[in-house]
Length: 485
Image (tube, rainbow, N blue to C red; front, side, top):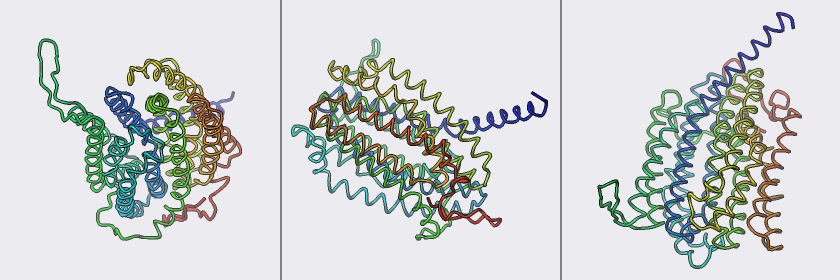
């Protein structure tokens, strides 16, 4: 190898190392935030699990509706993430701040809508979810309380996404940690009755409300409200993207490109989340043991997707910056480095999940049947984690540049063509158990891997090779182009 080639390789390695440092700097606060959220999910599940299998089933039976609503709101945040990350890449911070103001209006509208709708339907949701008659009332009351602060939860989701789009992942992390601490402390006092706690030779009387799963719902609702207020204040005061002084009335020049990105993501989230609802409904029909094992296994599994989702956030922000700055070299370097990093991290997390599945299940339940069933399905899904990491990262890259239609189509095919149809055939027609349903879920994940891998190797993910329809190049005045598929 001659000196020129050696210098070229050294320069390339240096750029890749620098890119890796930037990715990790953006990703680690999101990972830590999600780790804390998952830790609180673990604690919540363990606290509620101590009340019995029925309590766990009552809480878990409607949890997929939470995904449906939360992911729909997060789709709106993705539209603003795409616009703002590209604006910052193009050094058009005035447009980024104007978009932040439009996000405030969107949060108010969406937050109020998703407060009214679930509260009006709280009595019917457990019926639709095929919850056992004995726990329907308990499940309905939990559902009603947990959705009362949706305005604040909407603020946390959308404003947190926008802050990450601006490269500030630490503020949402700190707010998320504070919310989790508040949630756990309130759980401690609201779930359990007044009791005596012993620490060594010291005995303490700890006062408690003794509200059971209703106490868990109240604690979560209060923590959500606290987090929404705090992140709204910090967002308003942010140095780069504060909406202060900007017009809050709807501005279609900003909202249209955001909605062009958000709408396919919203359809994707709605279709997949509604699929989760249908999936959970079929699992609920298998009985309390299957519902409890499924709920706990989902909670356990969520911790092991943290590397994927944390890196996806960095991928969306950095790809948006690169596309806004029209830097194709940086964009390709990002893809190479971040895909390799994702695969390595998901191999590690999948291996840990496979090894410690029984021990993790035993944290949340003392029921031997629940532990055994949950351990089996967790070990099954652990084998697919490295493959599922590829779609997660590529979807983030494509979100950053506004290419959101293909991920919608792929996720729709995977969810409804494989998971739902397969689970219906297995559980409702053939009478098979939870293991077959999780097998269909893994089939869904593997289909996504195949479709996204083809999309990557054919270059269709690259906006320079396959630009979004109607997309114009940035001009010298820094005007943002239309963001469409």
